[in-house]
Length: 483
Image (cartoon, rainbow, N blue to C red; front, side):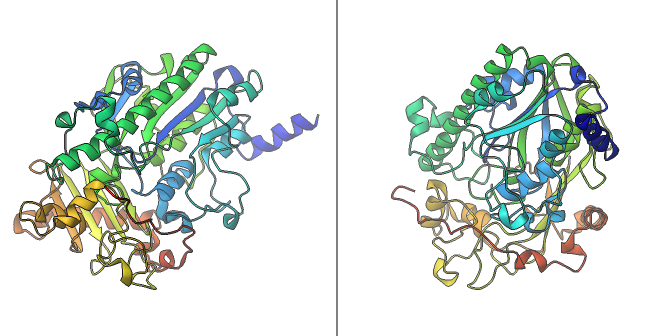
């Protein structure tokens, strides 16, 4: 009787699924740490061997324009879990923060609807949960691995599991990629990197960890198949933001914000499709809830992808998905001593253009050059330490390297605009050129209107609140020899 009363009470607040137990899909969500687009075989990367990801693509849907809410771990993961843009999440707009209990997450909502939930390794974070009132990771209880979770799950109960890998986060073992059989000569370098052996080896080491994530993911999916649950499970594979390299992670270019995304859902979703619609990872939370028959909270800014997934179509499916928004607040405290500001910015990305609004162009976009002035361990602390970063800094006066150094670390104007039809690597800022004035104005207006509609404090006169939130992390350690 008490159980029935609980079910009735949960139904009254929209927590119980509208579907029968047999119709509710499981959710298996796999996320790599710092894995960016297009580093997978399915995207044509000549050096990355990702058979598990590629298999999910063959049996499901490959998305070509998936973007995070923020190119920084904590805000990206907070936005993904809550289905809301990170700028709506108070402290969680920043790295090494907290997530208030008032912000509902999809695993918690699925738990309330009768799902078994859990995660392994990295889920929400980094940060501290107690200041936000939480005692448990919002992705669910911690399990040693997926197999342990499956054994603990009550028989017949639908589940929601977060498979969180620490790969390919730095640091890397130098030349681990080369030693594993990756040929640095085959590595496809982004246009903002100099073509140098050190850089090629660094990217190869990153790809080695991408491949390790893919291999471990394959082992987990084998368990899923052995339980007979694979075809009743929504399998999603993605990354929390772009690669941890200069102009990548913590930057608003594609190298920082665009991520791989593949989805498989048995017979529900026709496989072998490629979808070019613009997708935010904030769309995943409402997708999971929608698929489970659970009411999507009104405060979620993401939109369910179930219609796109079940459409059977490729290419551009939903005409409304013609752009995406994202942004950045504080990554690490890396400005002058006593200044807790990050390098705040917002962006709108369409098929043809990337427009970026930098709100504090007087600051250094990746931290100041002189670490001693900020009392931090490293110069340009917003960029993870690594051989590519070190190479750029040590060769900044070399005419062949200077442009790459400036692209990574030099100060930037208040507005940036990139014509992706001519400049897919986003290297040449055409903002303020007369021939782009109309486009720049239209994108600026559209971005600001949508930021206001989503109640972004950065444009509503409350911007300084982001700089007052505590930072619970430490500073980066100085690079080791060879890095």
